[in-house]
Image (tube, rainbow, N blue to C red):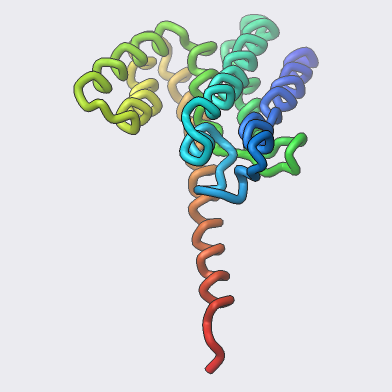
Length: 200
């Protein structure tokens, strides 16, 4: 990978490290990593502080992936996979942000922003499908899930399968972050149980 692409990865990591949810919640006197599901992301922010307060988090976290993907295209030099790597760097930054003690989120919105930059046509078609589904169900969780899991299916219509495989790799990273969060939650529950157990 050329030096300019490595530099783009460093920039993308730093952009991904911007702790939007932590900053927004701090203005309300809250440590977002200590309340709700403890994930410093949009979903926990809107559940804890309300939808209006969570809007900046949504915009910034999605912009991380969008900026990274655009930067990747600029330095790709004809290498189709470079934007994927640069978006991945932004996701690593979001997951382990240097500006927030390396305690970050699960990267869903950063991934979505990356989708828009990497494959805009597939992203637009997926969005239209999601909007139609939301119109029928009126349930945001179905809107979100159909978007994330439907994107690679739609992308397969427009892009080579190797591109879809790269998309799957980025999605696997999000899955890894969710698994980490679940494991951490179980460990926390186990420690809490031991802490509250009465001596025999």
